[in-house]
Amino acid sequence: MLPTPTCSSTPPAWTDLSKPLSSDFTPPTNKEIGATAHAEPGNPSVYLCGNSLGLLSKRSDQLIREELDAWRTRAVVGHFDHPKQRPWVKFTDEVHPLMAEISEAEVACMGTLTNNLHLMMDSFYKPTAERYKILCEAKAFPSDQYAFASQAKAHNLNPADAIIEDILSVLEREGSSIALVIFSGVQYYTGQWFPMESITKKGKEKGCIVGWDLAHAFANVPIQLHAWDVDFAVWCTYKYGNSGPGGIAGLFVHEKWHEVELPKYAGWWGHTLTTRFKMPPTFSPISGAQGFQQSNPCILALASVLGSLQSFTAVGMDKVRQRSLSLTAALDEKLRSSKYFVPPAEAAKGLNGNAKPAFTIITPEDPQARGAQLSLLFLPVGTGVMQKVFAYLMERGVVGDEREPDVIRLAPAPLYNTLLDVNAAVKYLEEAFGSLA
Image 1 (cartoon, rainbow, N blue to C red):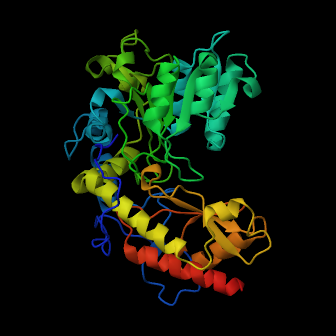
Image 2 (image 1 turned 90 degrees about the horizontal axis):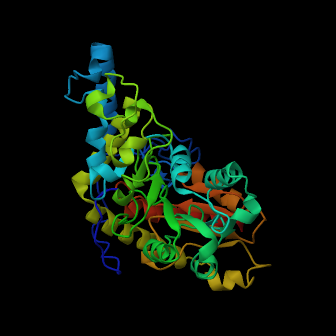
């Protein structure tokens, strides 16, 4: 992953939040996203949806254009002779060092998240009569749930029996029957950052293989996969990683497995580069995660993720995380100060059951238990309050992410969002509730 930042438990001061952390990103204008009720159509929108799709960086834009030019001027020759000294056969060498947490050999930029998850589970999920269960979260992202169920079926197991949902208590109680622990680093719906180190440690104590889906954690929260003894991990890069819609993904395989778990589904791009183009009949995999590569990756997708990762490294991940703590804390405080806010404990007791429209926050209040995302639950549930508020925000250029039936996710991405975005989002949220009254 990206270099691991260090950070204190207390968010730093907000004094530097009025300007973007990076100048590489430009949000769409109000007009471009169809903010019909906004008086200034040419002004930038308030884009708080980086948890779903990050913005295009200027570096990515430039690199993609350069690769299109290389394709136009060099064609097939570009695989080995590139006008910018980035031959396509070795393009991932530009990406892996920026993506790696500790060593290039433990990560590979390849495929898609779900495809990589299947590759990893096919290697690491080895059910036996005594140990066959998969431990996952209760509300895993649907694509993960589909993958878990299909892998269980592939081993002639009943998903309803093989897949269990909980964490530490279940590990303690049923660890001897659990073959694989697989959780999201950051839960996509609530924004909770799971205690990855303690879950991994408990899983290893019980003899389980431990893997992680880092779709919402990559480029968002500090992660130490190698040090925590994680067996494998997968992630996409188009959220906080800003690689573009459907951008190329990544995977991690701990170095302790490099000579043990060799790729089961070989492809020529995982073959050692020195003999790859000699087309030998026998597969000779690159050591480690990169041996799992199958087909040659899309160069335009690689260029896009490379540009974004360059933006991260230009700033430094320590600053990115500190900025994230501050910006998310600012949004959290302003939302909790709203007269329409209901504390989570009160909302859970149903005290808003017959009250006026309101909202609560289902993301943990502890900064160390979340990334850049806050999930707002609108009350009373099931009454259409969320849909009305979401439409009001969009009409005024505030781009969040709606999750049916009652949640809006707002994510102040640290690279490009500012305190002005936070203030505008809260302002229009309050106006939206006022319009409902």
